[in-house]
Image (tube, rainbow, N blue to C red; front, top):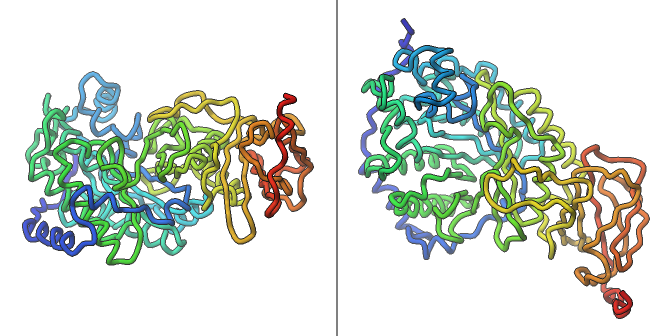
Length: 509
């Protein structure tokens, strides 16, 4: 027999009508109303556009089986899947050993929030977004609305709150992601055969387990709103990230209420906050658009975000991860920021509370690159063109499996204007075999950049570089010393109040 003495008594939330009235009271106080016209008056805070780089964390029960990916809780109940067969072979029938039975092994005994925060700071992250609740319905934070949260089972401590405190001590902003919407249908495979999803003793965890073709009920939607507000009130997150199913039409009025409540709370707190959404869930301009494992094809007039992972194969910790190279990840960061976006890069902690050595190495390597080249990244704005080079990055979602990693011949541009002058940065994630590189976008014949160049330097080195500019481009002689192994950034400065360089001889070409 499996010991289930660890399962606490069921929680029955009370006072929901009063809590919903309190939410509406905050909305009534303004400044935002729960309608799209008002919410389009939202502007992303300056800190978000300047941050450029954040860390995403997929941590949860799914890291215990560590098989396939973070959708194990769904697919272990879907007959005919590899996860279904793996579960039966490894753990037994789903009626005897269900997803809930992994919880005691999600103990996080070696979790050190200060060590995590120090790592993320070394990585150069400006904000961190841990999963607050994934599709599996397990709350990674302290909640009064469920017995299935980290303070009652598993770690039996508020790991989210502990990490948030540690991050703020490192001056890193804290967000949280909600995947709760998908829980309406996520476990429904278990209703098709004899499994513990059918056991009414656990329907507050596995339920509703309804068909994904059906719209969520009013009770479910109210609970979604109240859970999200509970999280906002308890942790005051700087970012709220939502997964895709909130675009289901039934959520629309609840999204308006949630956004107005969150923005009004932030106004009372005196801080700027961000909602990240996918597809068409929010009206344009009312929140910050997010693309999963994707890219934009051109410079955008608004700040946006790409969320991706260090792993190609999973968001959570699994055995046999397929990691991206540091060069590829730096290239993703450069491409995103050149088009006015932020990169939210995910790592997946283990169930013992540690982060895999390979993932630590990746984060520290990115941090080493940013320590040298961060001037070309943080608080920059896009150039008139995002970059140049042979690699064509396809726009859209779920494209990071394409063979489109930037090379030494690919550059991405950013701009900084401050009290010392105006600078153009050309960054690449790799070193060429040649001693000279040419930026063809700065060719005199293109007239993209009419200003006269004063000098060209490489971030991380003190001395200016040798260069000359002609009809073919800006030709730069690279130094023998490399400030970082994963590519470099050139800083191009311009003569003050100078006339544009003459191009009236272009007819010769």
